[in-house]
Length: 261
Image (cartoon, rainbow, N blue to C red; front, side, top):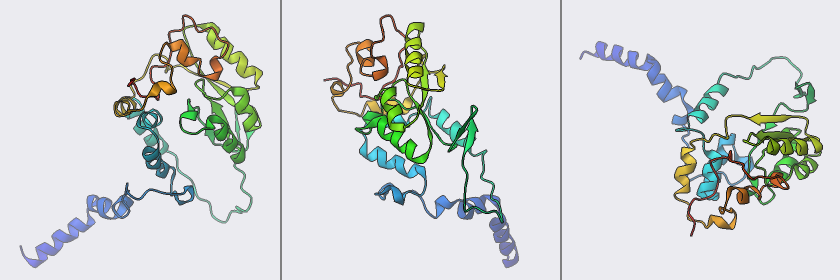
């Protein structure tokens, strides 16, 4: 190959979009994730995903799987993240930002923040104070909080910790009386919104959770009563005083290990 032909070939490679993407445009090439160098303090986090590997190191396998798992080969997680890529921050120039107003209107109510903490059940599996600690964090940030049906703290306790009524997420069941009891209690606690989850009670295939459950060697009966669905659900405050007989539409997954000794 002549020197001229070689030079033109190198120019072609250098101008290739593929080369530019892999060697220049993608920051992961210059700063790849190092699992051996995790953050030791929240202030060290560059983005929210820096917390996930720390959780993986410190939380039991089945509990981590419950929190991290999506549905069916994690296709839902990928779809969610790809969906968020459609939203971009639009920078502005020559605009006074000394006083930033992040308030927004949601369902006719003016909220101090556009951030809503989604419902997550069983939070005491990750922190001794569970939903109460999250409620206090939501209060400090002025964020709206939605409480899960599978909460490990009562709606009354969470509302008190938040300092204002929270929203309530409802799992539908095959018994109207159970759903009605949940809604009435949420309304009595001042919840202005009840969000019904309609695609959950039929079960879901959480592959990451199920795989990690097999590696968890803990004695899960110390925290979970597997003698019957009713016994397990009675450990959740929102089920207190509710007649669970004949209830079949329980959630299919759980954050505990399946192994019992």
